[in-house]
Length: 424
Image (cartoon, rainbow, N blue to C red; front, side, top):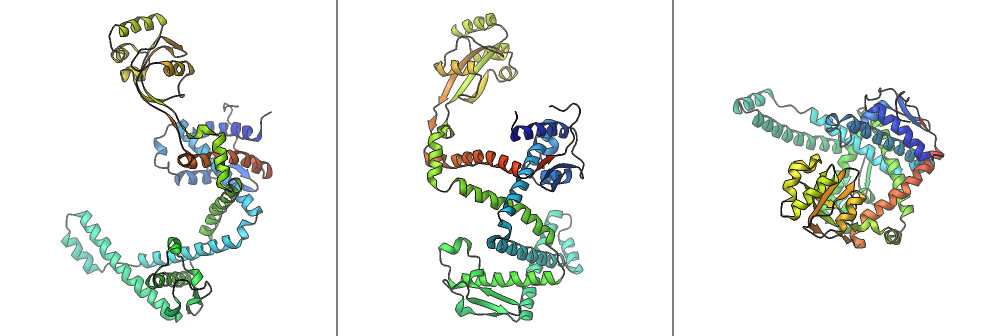
């Protein structure tokens, strides 16, 4: 019997086949996770925001299909993590509430600044002078306009924020704005606003005490942030949709972080995993390989005799190899990792001295003559060198089982109709 993962894989194979010919309709429900439908529109939005968006139109149908299928799997996984995060109460945790509140403030502040920037316009006389000065040089004209608009924006921003402070009657307690102040210490206050030491974002500076001047800069930034955000909210700016998008993106990430901490509670777990998965740190030998492929053993033996007599394997490959790549590159197959070729060839290459032609090797592709012209020895990485790839492999292994568990906990219903000739 197929397990859940195999069933999903087969269903997804049908999706890939269908997607190769046309993108799904925007309103079409492709899969439902719990009570949440993932539509064709959601898939196309994920595609447009992916790193491959600009390359997608140039991809062939099979690659486009694979990418759509992979993105759909990711959307399903994200929704499963979202549901699990909510079931674990992460969405109502104090840490997430604070993060959501800070994100909301940042969105409102950005809206206020965008509105301010959009209102900046050059006086017509100034615009005329610029056009006359940079006549015929569109790039220079655009740069000059941008510079002047930037200067005007900075002036207006300073005036705007100063006006907000005056209106809110903000008082700054400079004597309290010092490193080490208790988190609840009020550093600035006004009508409807209070900034405490614990509100300042010290970030990377938390390990290095900033001077009083830097503390004041951080305090001013916080005051400006809160006042501009409040002004944008009063102006009717609605950030609800973007907050929901943040929630949908952040909660799965938090749940994943939580699981990684469960799977890797300490460094010893990663070390033990590496001890039992040494291949993760194995750098295989690399060989510079020359090759001729012939259709018959008799032809291969004849050419081998010519090579032993002094002719060049590479020149003969250019003339006689039935392997298209090898013929075009005069038999030079480049640097190949040990263990990545056909077993018959790997065995021959492992035993072959450098710069000597091999005996004829038969494979499903034909009859081969091989030569190793150079080698780069393999090695085993120390734990410190391999640590990142080992932890990634450990997490990937745990994730596979974890997602099967989530799929059994939350209903995943694939509703994309199969085409008649889709693979079964």
